[in-house]
Image 1 (tube, helix red, strand yellow):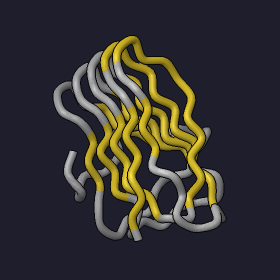
Image 2 (image 1 turned 180 degrees about the vertical axis):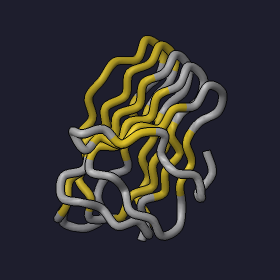
Image 3 (image 1 turned 90 degrees about the vertical axis):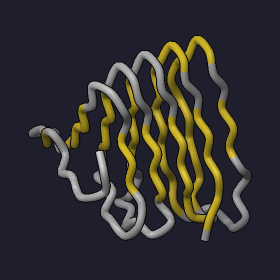
Image 4 (image 1 turned 90 degrees about the horizontal axis):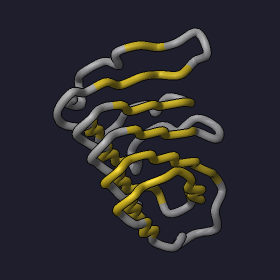
Length: 121
């Protein structure tokens, strides 16, 4: 999915679903992150740059795949909460460089994948 594609489905619950059979979801530049963003696909991950994005209060990113991880670039003041399961893969989170003012929950479920979060401006 490139930056101009729209989500596959927005549910009544407010969850925004992104489905990909092969490949992942990539977003960067100015965009608005959904409150409840769900990325689903057998092969592929989520590569999101949130440094220019508009974040709602307490957003949640859920990524489910067989193979594929989560790579995020977040603003310096975003606190990260991670949960999920991965058979192979780790979690690497850069420490905050500013006092956390916002929170992002990342849920990742995969057989092979990990979570890598770096800090930006």
